[in-house]
Length: 165
Image 1 (cartoon, helix red, strand yellow):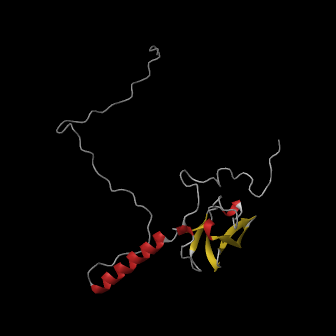
Image 2 (tube, one colour):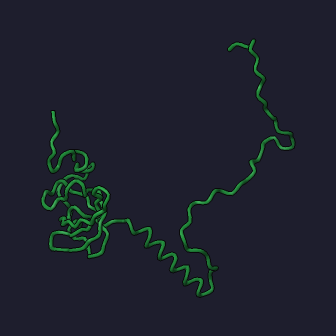
Image 3 (cartoon, helix red, strand yellow):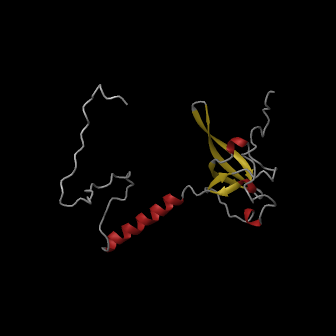
């Protein structure tokens, strides 16, 4: 049997509500303060059909470019063939949540600024504030329980064709 190509085709798991998350939407969803320039994640709330984004945008992160009474304008990147286009969509507030994608960056920036101030005050030594990949662990010697005795060296036994396994 051929499958359908509808607007919500193959969204059975994508749009299903999480365990113990079904039911009416809480007021905190509507009381969030979202401004232009904020990063938001688009997650379609299947219990509210109005202003629901297309399934392609579910789970995508974008930047707010417009705020209206009931909806948020979000600019999202979409790859079409070899190009990445900026798509502007309007989504109701129920289908949007504040993104945590910049939390790590802002925390690192605050820590770097604090360290710069400490260096200017003379309470800290200057160091490189650039991110570096994880370095290999330092080498060490493994302690042996056979203290004072020579290590046992094992060798491979020579091949014996008469020996059958």
